[in-house]
Length: 128
Image 1 (cartoon, one colour):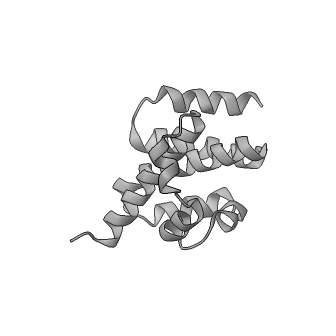
Image 2: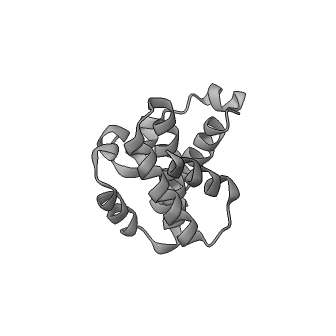
Image 3: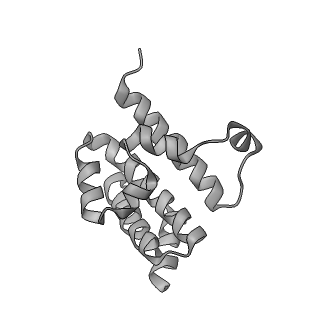
């Protein structure tokens, strides 16, 4: 039986992978066929939509993530980094890009993974 935590973690990974494909301009046909509704995924994960999430200060979002199990936090940070990076690029919103940078840095710290694409995104954001 799948618990709510496992289901939520699967949604987080699904959203993060979908955003990663959009960031790389490589959306799969199956992704488009599924018509992933980012807003409904956001509501399933956080219980509110992206508009409300994006209006919260970074510290408040970090506190929301810290309420989750420690082993799952890296997945939240990666997904949040991808989410804010994608929306920051599409909407040319520097506040979103700044949040993306913070969440990517927290992802690198909590995961202990050397992720060159994420490091490159952080450097790209830092140049702006």
